[in-house]
Length: 204
Image (cartoon, rainbow, N blue to C red; front, side, top):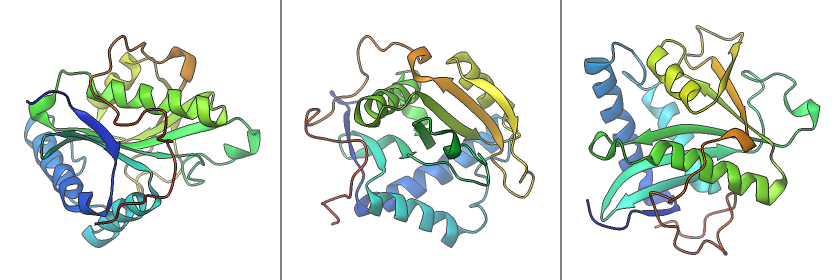
């Protein structure tokens, strides 16, 4: 590992590294954790890759870079997927919806997952007054459920679209209760100029 790890907004050139990381993580999970999470692109490779491509184009995916290697990522949304969180936005409570939180196995144990979640949540609180973070987790990956509970997330049930949609275990947390990060495991290039949400400007 080189130092420091760099956090930056993802661009179109990150599509292949990110989809490759999803596939690599899915293989590891299948071999080591007895779960089918990401064992195959859902519902198809073209649709899965399209979701990643769209998030990159919208400027809502962030990646952590170790030199030339993509080692972690998070995607974010301001509004709920109504299939998962029906009527959530009607309450008028500003919320962050993170997804695709990934850490390369070579960089486990550095606090990248919790660091990305807390960083994004604090950004959302500053930028638009977000008070809650809500995440949908692979329904049958019970070890991952435990991970989020260990960070302070509370289970709020399962969405009605399971098993048709595979990530229906729902968790939420007040942003004030997220882990306090004394030292970020990554560096942000221009922390005072980079907003959490925004159209990307670099697409090559």
